[in-house]
Image 1: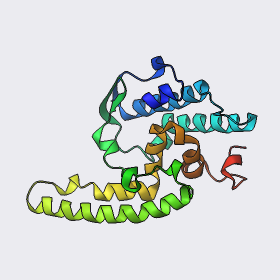
Image 2 (image 1 turned 180 degrees about the vertical axis):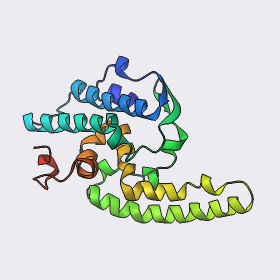
Image 3 (image 1 turned 60 degrees about the vertical axis):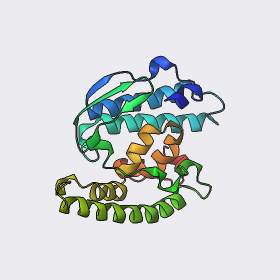
Image 4 (image 1 turned 180 degrees about the horizontal axis):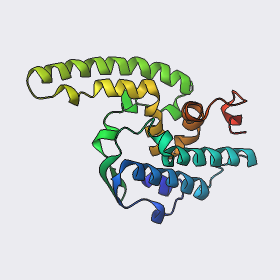
Length: 205
């Protein structure tokens, strides 16, 4: 969260500092933070009136995705999870976050990938499959040793998260500076249908 305060010029008072009994409450706080980030951002964050509308619309739709129970049920697996956010560090509910793979398998974040988002996905998919195969082997060994239950496997849920696109909801929610490209490229059409334009820059119109 330091990055959002220092580079995004979000007032520290806007950073969540609460205890959440529901995962949806936590995601709602993140959605509101995305709006605060847009409103507070300077340094040529918005290129034009259309760019401002596009970014504002993305955040409103993402907030709807979080607040609408029917939509939320499509991606939020576990509603009840104790979570607290103190200072700069969010303490995350295990059931909703450990079932999603980490982006660090490629070291460089998708928004900084020089070949673009789709190429990042292609390369990440290969790395992820190798990672999950190794994880599955470790899980098999732990189950045989009585150290893990079958229902505690993470490799399967991680694979499902990547295939379904839930991975991108988690990523967009927690990465303010990557939000726009990820939202229009990976989230919007999944929940709100196709658009008249194939260009992500015009998808909001």
